[in-house]
Image (cartoon, rainbow, N blue to C red; front, side, top):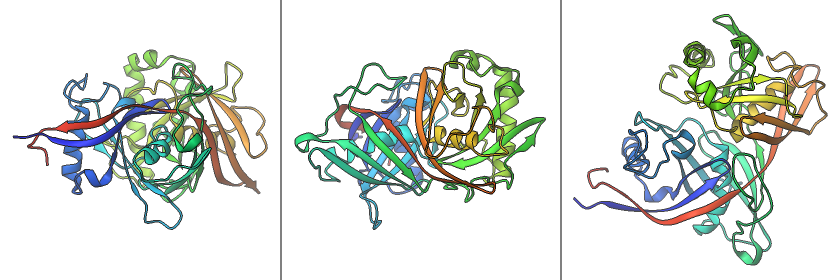
Length: 360
């Protein structure tokens, strides 16, 4: 049976990478779409040997783009997290790192015309409803990938892509604090269940008898931690109105601790069954909001609350991620207005990716 060819761009976005495709080139039906994405990435094998995944959660991510019918947006960004080994596809969350590549990919695909010297791309993240403005360097109407901006977790430097995230509160659950509390106690651990850009369950590292400065490998070797964390995450998901999250990558889990290397706070972020090598863009916004809001597990960890917009350096296993959170705090009412980050992306390859003929 003849294999199917699907046009794609292979791109690094932030500290993740994966195929970027037009939504119209992929099946509409959810099961057929999932089967196709599994075949593309090679999900079901630890090395993704029969696909183009990289054997880690940050390299089995996929982006599907289309011209938007939204009055505000230029392009719709539909994200799918494909598992490495278990042949699961989760379209509930979005991914901020992969989103970094959406602006350049949309221009490369002809979905958005380029301007000189910068192209502003308005993106609707259809998984969550968030709106994002990406400013892409396009001198002479061509996407520029080379530049002097460095981000921890990626070697070398590249052209900056400025991102401004809006409408990031309650995208998955309908509320910033979907349990109705800024702090809950589950299985003896205080947690904050928060939905800002990404539904997350956040705890203090010390409550798990951790420092918060462990490497990702050290945490992944600590199976006792995961055995303790995962039931808490599942119960938190139920309390957040997300149902049975046993096979869902959301809510994510994060640990916070006082900064060790001059940042605002130290973080460890889980995807959720292994530790992120650095820090997710969406997760950074949830953690930042938790650190700034009174009454959460993060309240006070970073010291005095900075004035809005708060420029925060969040330490992670590979360095620091800088996020700017614009917020409003009035009589203990906390509101996130927007978040800003500068990241980089690079086009790695383009062409056709092939899936077996028996995959719809």
